[in-house]
Image (cartoon, rainbow, N blue to C red; front, side, top):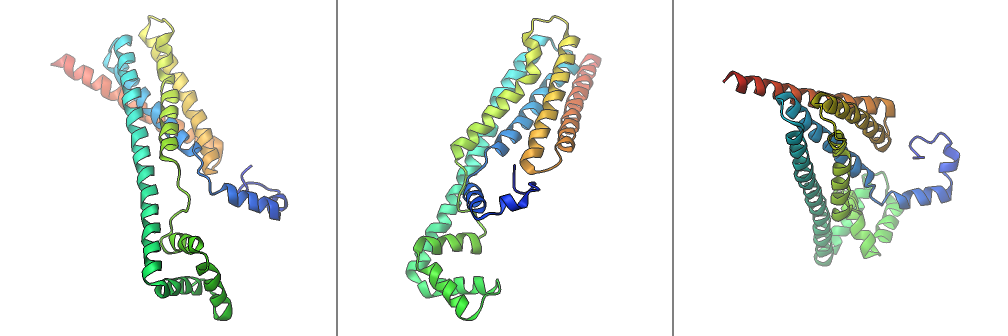
Length: 251
């Protein structure tokens, strides 16, 4: 259980528990990438299915459009997450390189930055000087401090490959749910769409529960929130499909 919601605070605040928690919190949690990818996968794929149903397309056309969207949009989202995560990592490394260069060229100025940073936290006198000495005696610790305190950047960044892969897998798995009824061999388009809608609604709710767990919000409320948002997107897509079909038919 996350320590933010653990009611047994004494167990989560022992020296060992604190050390384990602080060590673990430097590792990126890819569950958030998975949850967000799953939400986008279900919303966009069912929007395609709903739009096709509203326009009166055949089940085959709806399935082809859904699969094409699933692969293309899933890959696009994964690549976007990969590039964004990679850019973040490169930026952090660039800041580290700049700070290393500054320490080499103007070490006294960089020591003064450390001094003023911790003076701003309320330290003063000999204690402040001791803190400055301890930090600046270790080059890595010195750079780490500048990265986090001066720039507000994380020391550890997620793996771009893992982040992109988690996004794509979640997008593909969750996004295929609205398409499953098309694989059952049913002939009635309305039955297929109804089953797809029910399966999608359940998936929306389950993803919302997972999202609530990740962001530490009430899970039932989060599940209903995602269900409503996804349902609204599907309703809009269905309405547009019906409108376009009527528009084309009138023409």
